[in-house]
Image (cartoon, rainbow, N blue to C red; front, side, top):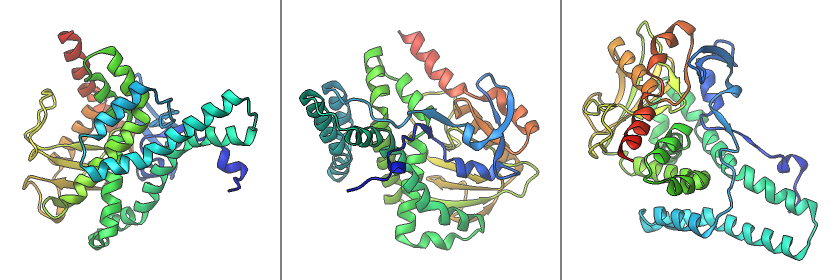
Length: 332
């Protein structure tokens, strides 16, 4: 198989929220208002935010890393374990090939360039494929056309994307790592996250797909005087029974997941009866409730169409992660 130079370019600036999605909050198809690390308000290109260098890059899989990955995989049904293995095996094989080549003194620049590209680009390319699979779906939903999800394949693609957009973010990773019991385990999770995050997203997406005929899928039209914002953790559980100051794991039926598709449109997958299946028109109280919760569950970034709106919510940014860290520090 012949590779073109572009195939070997390393994709190191990894967005954990789809940059093209964030353009829905842009007035010029490029720039958005957002909160900085120091909670200032700035305006810049969507390409400059919600990213981390080498976020999806392979990290060497030691025996300890492999044991952690397999222990988490074994919590899944057998068919998902097999899927996880199909993703993991190429990395283990490549790791063996690279080791043998270096030990034998082989100096094949193209081979090692391919290996480095595989390490940096594979998970990024998988997420890009998931994004492409839902591009037309999201555009149809913005026209209030839910019939596109009548197709089983489209619903499968949408739920796959949905699961990964929950699990692929930095805030999701950091909350999982912060909750671990000791520093060595935290280190193993962080070094393995490039793969763990992907299998978590796969599992979450499959779960949503399997319950698609039980859950309520709600399209929420926002005609109020306030836009939805979005964040670096854009899909969150907003069930009314959940208290963001309480870290207890919600009951399985306390699951109302919200995703702002645009400033004027949201999508929810609900266990509750808060909204009916199909199209719903929502109140400004609901918009403000959701915007506050998006800020609470964010790590650094909340994103909006104007500076003034973000000023109202920036004081809530990072609250959830801080609660997790403070509780862990208190217990150690």
